[in-house]
Length: 95
Image (cartoon, rainbow, N blue to C red):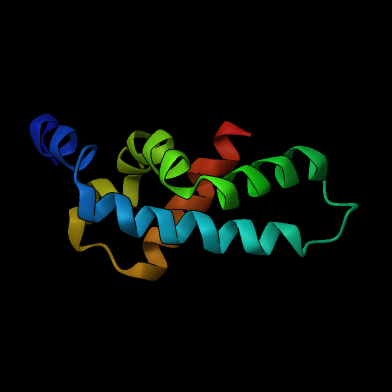
């Protein structure tokens, strides 16, 4: 993707909606994970905040997700499964 394409995708509302679903999916997973998971406390706090304010979380993480290699390659046409992986990778980078 070009810089302008990336910049446009970083503010695309429809794409943000897909990221929001990915964040909520990952938050649900984190809440149910083994408490012995490294950084579990931090992860659970993120998950709870995401569940309370999913739009805010999606907005905050959207630029990082857009810069993921899979998103850079596929753009907005990325599959849901590949986008989920990009969301989880992005969240893990930030936690």
